[in-house]
Image (cartoon, rainbow, N blue to C red; front, side, top):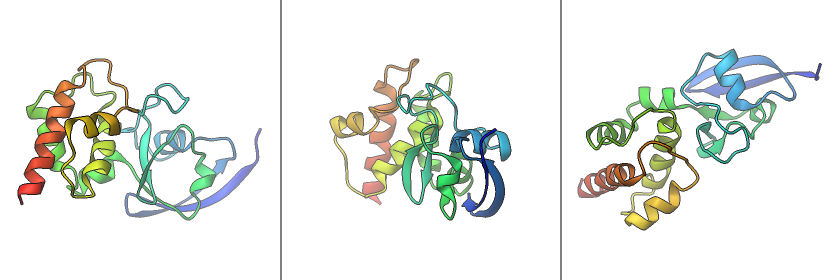
Length: 159
């Protein structure tokens, strides 16, 4: 058995104190210990983006980060970002543009798209494709995802 550590962090605005094994990944901690199952375990190599979460404002791969590394950190999952309304327009655009099918990649895709749009600039379609390139979608072919992100970018810029 690996060593166990006490950690304290903020998850979706709520303080969390837990004991975790040194080798437990952040995504496994969120899913198994906190029942926050929106982030998915895909490749477990940091390639697919299904496990994406935000740590201290940055989108990271939850399968590559250990839970013990988040001691003192602010962690936001798709549940928290969704519940806050921060990505409501993105979620709506993904639905309207049929930018999700099986939904497995969608939480990571939404977090990554929000990261791109948070700077307030109007990204080109190539910029959008580049930014989401680390998130694999095996169902949509990406065109509808790029359409959805682009439509939200234009709508936010118009405000």
